[in-house]
Length: 313
Image (cartoon, rainbow, N blue to C red; front, top):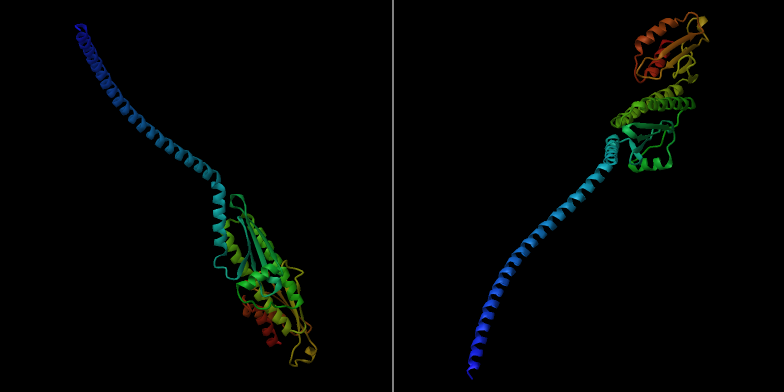
């Protein structure tokens, strides 16, 4: 009986010690847990920062890849942009032409002349270093080009000229194509538009000359047109004029041989005038001097010369 209370007291003291020890350990664990929670929060914050940094790095890498791609394609894209601009610049305000084909670095345009001979097609190819190659072809347009021209607006029937005038047109248009090719050796894309305008003006000049020659051939019964035997790229219009009124006995049955030399640059330069008469008393030299003074360069010079000669005789 005496030992039992002592055992109970000893057990209580031991239990109390264990409780205090356990309480101390719990407090220590709580502190450790709090510290671990703080460290965990710091680690999570660092992890989030690393994830953000990783995302930024990925964005930078993607941007770098895009920059590299853009740099690689810059030359081709610049070329495409330049050629597109040059093509637009070339065809704007050209109401008498139609675009028959267009590519990344090429464009073809067609012009419908008043006759089949004066219709012309130009093809421009833009190569490396913005060099331009031009091909010119005249004559009857293809059905596809004619269809495009018909769609662009109303058209009139093309004229048919005297066979000699048709030969004149063929010669002049062939010379024009050679001049275009010769002038394209140093052509730049910005000059495509001026080349097209130059071609149209040259064709218009050729057509006006052909109309005049065709009309004069119809007015002069004994006349013909042929290439000049003396001057390159020139044509000689020859007519035989007979006086309408009676003159001296020796002039009856007389005839005036008229040769008008049409230069390639007609009507920008004077025409050549040569007269021969079967009548010795006819002052052909005086007539030539008078014609050279009166017939100035310009459209209608051939017509004016013929009319003036008819008045003289």
